[in-house]
Image (cartoon, rainbow, N blue to C red; front, side):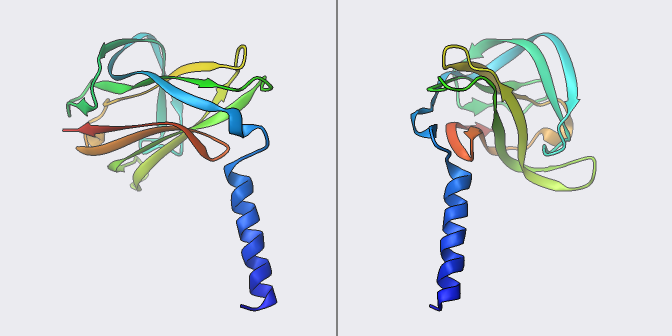
Length: 168
């Protein structure tokens, strides 16, 4: 390997390491508090989310846990996901996490087929912790895709919480 190739490899490895973790991240952990089927409560607001399969995200006031399961029925109106908590955010006042859902192919309004939906979520930890929900509701027929759906919360590129669901 030439010196130039070695230098490029080292630069690429350093860039990858920087993208994955930041100083102070090693103490940040995540846990799932409940998972399965949910009822969405209160007012609903659709907002633009261009990096998702359908181009929008649903924001709701609250959730009611209906059943603990990793098996999800393939029907309109079904909401599934999890309630989670992040810990070890003691020095954090405001930050962002990436919400990522890996799913079977879904065709968006733009005609593009996606197998991954991502969105940025602002967090404001209290006493070093952040608590929230990650759910998905089948609202349109095109979203009804059987198969494996993986829900993740990432911070600085590192998955903190991950859960797989089987939709049938």
